[in-house]
Image 1 (cartoon, helix red, strand yellow):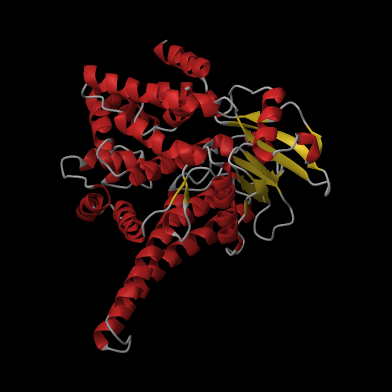
Image 2 (cartoon, rainbow, N blue to C red):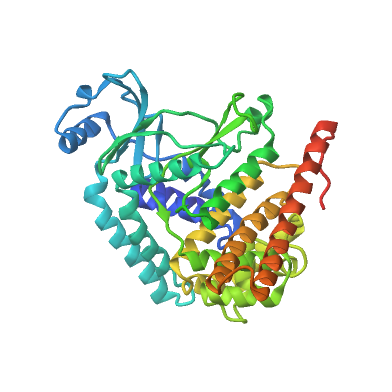
Length: 453
């Protein structure tokens, strides 16, 4: 099969070609399932650099051998990715068990050539097949890769995100502490866990899949609509679950790794994107089109395709009830459409939208894939209600700012605007609260399934 041949070529070329394959594996909204599923092994199956090469790089970057920093340093890595590998070690003076992330030494020499080759490949594809213009993908890699190769920057991203989520009550998110970092070396607290799709681990430890799904939804909606940068690479290899009976609300931790690729979403874009999703949830096509134009410059002709891309749903579902569960028939319809010309249109469309929207789309699709792998009882209903809460909050904050800019809240017009804003916000909050209590009641009653609403 052509997909398997492509997989072997990406594996053999290594480095950024594996990174390219990882990116393609997340593009369920663009590529047929045959392709995205074939590339999933690239999330975990990557080449390993020798210990001798790592030792040489360590001396070059720190001026000291590995033994000067660590009491023990495992020669074999516990994990290897496209750009780096991770070794277990013990700090020399504190005895702290740490994970040492080291960049593949050969990358410094080969990345410029690999990027040039990737750019040439996509330019050639565009020349011979103009309808498949994927230059935007190589442009995004050229912008993102330098950030992902700067481990000192990754350490700063991790610390900033950890500080933000430490202020959120009952958030189960855990980000390993950063001990120190250099451009090619990052030393972090060692925290292990299991993949989110390890359903046997979740079930054997009494971890509720629906609660894990809801927690993931809250974490990434906070990043998209809250006051913190967005983690743009939340694939299955970068998230782990750990049983934790010490928490008050949950009995698990969600561990987030690999903080190299972050993006700041401009405030107005966050708010317009929130309004777009509120329109999607309400099946309000007029406002969907309005805010799709604002956030991504989408024309009326392009809108049906864009709506399917951001929701992962057939357009008929978008205009009726996007919160319903995707049927096997709908999945077949979407997959068939990709083979009937939609793929070509979607490639062209994604080449026109702003890069930040592409990364948001990528994050949406990765989190949607994580949720589907959990095989939750509630389906998408709860997560859409959580999304609605964050969107409603973002819009409410904008409305309050607008009212304040117009003078005293006691003025009749401002008072009326405040009441309307509050009532809209509280309506969403009340719906979600009632649904949370409904889920709790079902769980207490010990019922096996949760009915869709």
